[in-house]
Length: 444
Image (cartoon, rainbow, N blue to C red):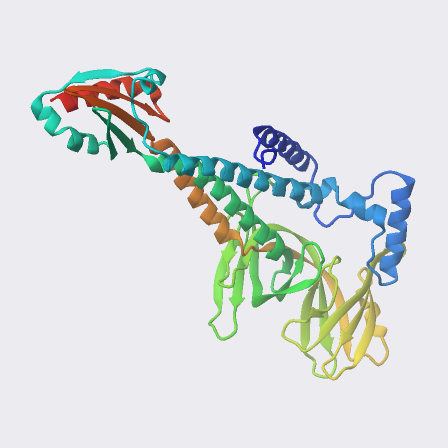
């Protein structure tokens, strides 16, 4: 326990924490990226892992797995950083328990008697001669300055007055705030979700793609981009702002129109938040049903994995492979699942959109086209309310630490002569002045 609660351990942990944060700030972070260090061992492991993925497996070689525990491109979610955070929390808990135990023990300790031996430990000692009236009102006047304790012993009366006991617990409130903050952050890391939607103007979706796995995740509502606007600084081609006008549709509720721009997100009732992140060009797949003549659209992301539900249709699109062909440019192989179980495959050449028209026995015709999109970042953090609670606790702790000084006054009454002294955890330099003021009040 002494090692875990030592100040030396706290200093070293803070130094290492600062160093790792500097690495995370100076090196651009790319969560989800696999880091391959230089060296034949790691390069061979990377080749083996690539072949495993192509064969449908997901087992990472041991050397590559160990290296990625130290991934400098994902510092804040790496094993060393998480271990460091856990050690810092254990250190805070151990320090708090050690010091809080001593504090509680001191609160239960017998009252300090200001006898002739004890008064030598105080630098400020005031001697007051009290009249009969002052003697009669002594205890009531002392009680105005805090909790009064009294002890009669050896023809003397001893008094102890304590004020601001709450001030001794402020630092532990701050420690508790740090622990609650860590819990909130862990909830966000373990159960939070974050990803992107590249939504073309006029397009809609009910899903977003997870930042790490690329898997589609249900939003719980449908979002459509009605319009997208880019504002420029007057007389220049520099972008000053960009914003999206969105239509939000939730089952059983009337549609909601909202605007999202930089630093002005949309917060959905189910906890998801849409942020205006970027803009650019994306690929829109236009699917025409030859039997009904209806046309559907779905936005395709090159990093997407897994099936994609085509909005407003019973069709499901499954990307099989996407790569850059040296002759034909971007090419996408996909499967289109129909509600009756029929599956048709298609090969799309983005530079030759008419290529799909020659597919025999096809129920649909698929045409890729490049369109401008609004990039919406999606965030879901169930731990944010816990983090807010930690900020409240932290502010309360600061107010207690700086606003509630803890003072002790000690007195010994022998006949009509009163010896008075005191100490404080703050503003000790003003204690002499406060003792003179208290002496004058008691003497009056």
